[in-house]
Image (cartoon, rainbow, N blue to C red; front, side, top):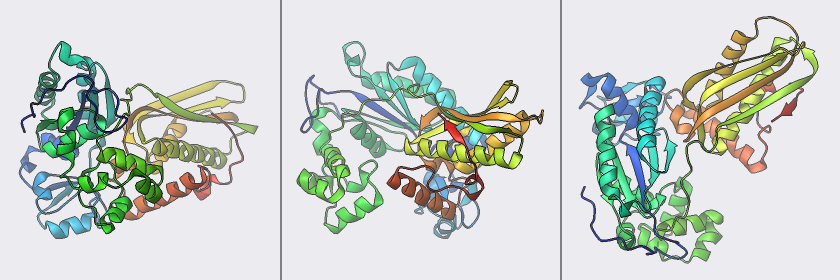
Length: 407
């Protein structure tokens, strides 16, 4: 898709309180999990393919464009996807493969981009503001995309516009394997005819409520007084109104901004009770896992630390595929603990550390989750969010631990 060519004059603004014009690029690796799998299994190219849980209770995480032709979408139960597309092949995701390709793309962008944000395992933002004085932002991005595709074999699309919201919408409009630039003067003409469904991160409940109000297009939405949307949706109503008006002042968040989260527990009495030790570790993982999901982060490194009664301290860590899934984190933490705790002396402290983050949601774990488990996670997190208490909903095995947490 060709970039639109109106000149972008410095200082233009879009909507109220927009601030100085920026140049923001959003890049998205097209059907990322499927694309990675096809590089490993080229014989599947051109066939309807889904990555996700293969059981009847599994969920589709990513679908090829051939499968999407039949209506197969991410987040859809696998059983329903097979009904829509009887010839659908469903494969479990290769976490290590996806992480490796994502890291390769990240390294290429980090080498060239002046400022970038790794928004998720397959999405990146770049701030190109001011670059046009020296080199065309659109040409720079095209060259970067060409290099990424050449070195990885992955298709990707990108959008270039005045902020993160509009740039992401440009990318979605340009897919697959396309590009679109929308200048400041073109933002509203670009947004107005689009469905409200195209607004990034518009929740399903908000979408349904707006549709009941007969609001289908962004033009209709932005004509609703902001006060009315605030009454309906609270603070989120203001955010929805701003997006409909092309307003988004959110900055890029550098990838290295936050490096780790951790917690430790010092026991009142030194112990070698394995049941108690593992209960404490599980409880700590639940706390940190909720912290990740609350911040929309995924980690790729897990570490465990122990201190014996004689104050000898040992630690170990390992790389994992990006996740915020408690079950996967707990399994890995317990494996590391069993590997580390071999002297069978009394312990005075245990600790867990999660690090190496990217932004992303629990959807990354749909390969192994089923709809029942996903709904359970969401319900648990809603209760924790509502009462601002990560310990409110816990696994039974971790509820008996009497610990003194140290952050």
